[in-house]
Image (cartoon, rainbow, N blue to C red; front, side):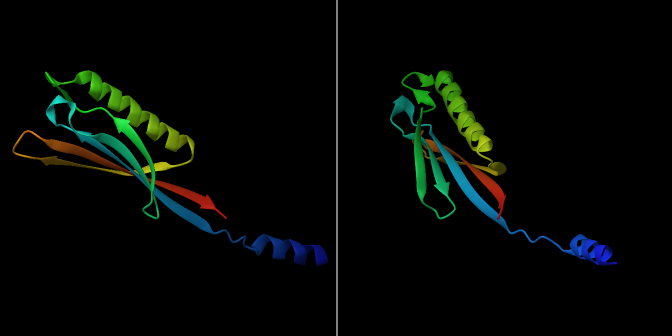
Length: 121
């Protein structure tokens, strides 16, 4: 009878775990200013809004026009960053894009990547 009581108590005892959710955002800013005069970067921000990291990207345009080599370089750098975060346990939650364009052929292409990590404590 004692064994049955112990078994029943253990079977219905729930283990309480607390899940901690963290967020991290990276923003890629790619300049479309001709001649390489713009600044292109990946900015990594943690859940407190503190800048954690800044990685240089190439501008979309060179002196002679659109530079597909620069775009390919940026794709590689951004993909490597996403892979790194994924390997660290971050899950890509949401992607948002936007464009800022000026009348003088200047502008920015912005992409925001929101990552989430759930850990049990």
